[in-house]
Amino acid sequence: QVQLVESGGGLVQTGGSLRLSCAASGIISRINAMGWYRQALGKQRELVADITRGGSINYADSVKDRFTISRDNTKNTVYLQMNSLKPEDTGVYYCNANIVRLFGPTEDYWGKGTLVTVSS
Image (cartoon, rainbow, N blue to C red; front, side, top):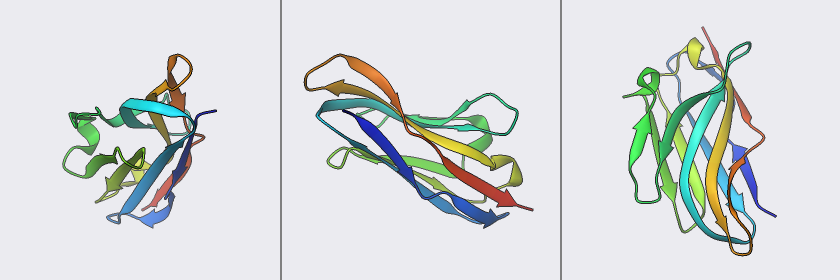
């Protein structure tokens, strides 16, 4: 059974920083793209950033130059370094990964989410 577990959320003041981590576990053959999404109260889930296995990166315009996504393929882990945080960054942050299981189909998996709250 494949699982994604996020950590690192919390409460921070405007201008502060947080680092999110997401580790995949289970019987995994390979992880393709990994990414972070967020959902603010009353809004749709949106892409924050994603990264391919080879390291190609895509950011939402709203977080460019403030957030940095990275991954460690040896640890099946993706990170999101968030700097210069703003109140509008508040929301639940979800990890997503496209995972090739050792015995089974390739599927998209989601973590349960970690709450980030930025106070003004």
